[in-house]
Length: 375
Image (cartoon, rainbow, N blue to C red):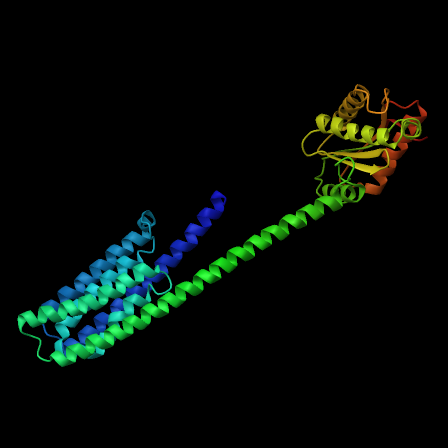
């Protein structure tokens, strides 16, 4: 993954973490309002100072967590969402609340499992089970503590509450296990689909290469060259020119007739190798047909195009003898320039006329269209 993509992903994840935190913080605010209602109704066992102190601690804890998220310090932890830590904090707050509600804790019992809902789709199974066990043990510990203080007046009611809480937690654990298994299957299917897509993309690239490439020389074919050249011509800026050259291997028919087609194929392949060493990266060379090739030299002028074609001509002439006894190799080239207002067909026609002049002048030479203006 590129650095830019990684930053975008981290930014989006951080936004998700902050949204989840704000959702949890809003739940605390709702709970504080319910505590106020319980206190005013006389169901809260404690003083106003207890309510205010507990509410202040809740707000302080959420303020600290908010600071951690908004300053991105959460990204330093193994779990940047801090889900388990927030669940533990919610369990502690709910246990404190149940302790002060005494006989009115029944309606608030189900809120005990609300913190677990934040980890239902996110926490691993083992961590979710640990949090569920903490909820149950916190309630049991509260009952034991109250029994030690002599505040536990209805043991049967507590037993029923504990049983109901256990059933709810057990059901949640089963559901969490189902959710995690479903997510794992979906993740595996997504990975499998991604692998299939990568394979298909690779096959498509191979097919595109086969369609665009000349099988013998490995160069682009005529159709693909025309598509590339048209695109580059449309992208030309005012004052910018490309070089265009038609290249023909001299006496190639004689090579095939005298030395055989295998020798002719070797000459074509040898030319492709020589051209690869002479051209710049980004220049486009294609097999135009038979022994004829076409060169598009990007962002070039007359001098650079001429030097390139001459370098290619001399390098090809100095090529070691090909198989089949071919000892003398040469080429001729017809050159022209492509401007922003040019038509590709017109430019190819100019290069073809220059190539014809090179052949008439004795071959083994490069002729420029701008030097051969008809009277």
